[in-house]
Image (tube, rainbow, N blue to C red):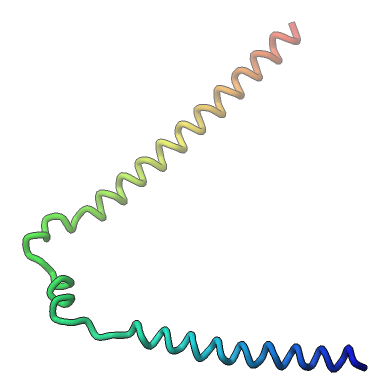
Length: 95
């Protein structure tokens, strides 16, 4: 019977701590939600001088695709070489 009482007190203890944790978490979230000031807005505004450099995303995607294709080709070549060596070894063993 005492064990059951301990379980309920432990459960209520965890419940009270979880409610306190939720309050602290919601308070910390509210503190970060601040409207940016004029300096931050000026820094986040689009700059005409930087427009030529915006197209790097497409070239990065193309470069990644080329890298992926080269990786696949190299792995396929390695597998082929391993297969050829194994086949030659097997043919030499039979003779």
